[in-house]
Image (cartoon, rainbow, N blue to C red; front, side, top):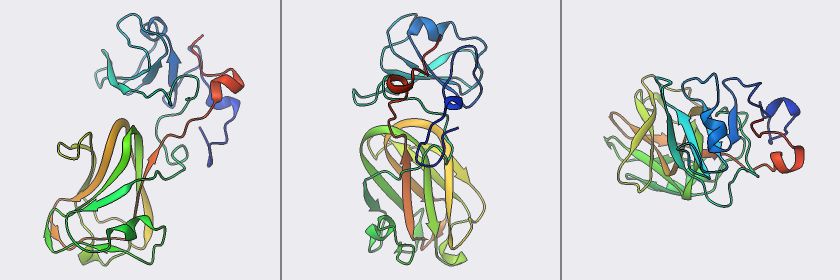
Length: 233
């Protein structure tokens, strides 16, 4: 597992002979096709087209463990020579990403992005209030962190974390049906997605208060080039 600040050790890197459910494999299409055993949710990054896999694309094993599904094509800035990560945990997603905030209603939405838990945004009393972050580009997302600083009346008992390519069509990545801890940060982890927008949306009517709202993205690490680990062998 990566530790805070992405301080890597040899135990983080993988090979075909030593893999577990925290590994993200990196290899050619032919190498990915030959991975055995496989498990639901397993991820692999393709370095060369072949065997039905496309170069510079992240794949994930489906829930039935019968096929690899393409998660998305990665940009030239994020490629197999720069990336080696575990599946999402708060230890791996250590640096909050930049972005701009938008909300369903209410004043001072930028208070959620000022790294000051003493300030907050409060929506109008409305159905399904939401706060959305535009990360600025499509990227790998795996966690959000929210500081719920309001009263119980200002905090949803039911809410979702959703992601989108265009801020129009949204997909759920996490749902909660209990009031979160108040006056503290809570990190919500989810399966890695390749999207631009992320939002928290209440599933009830209230004036929702949030003090801080951050997303976490994978930060490139020159693991393979510098350490010689991470390739399938």
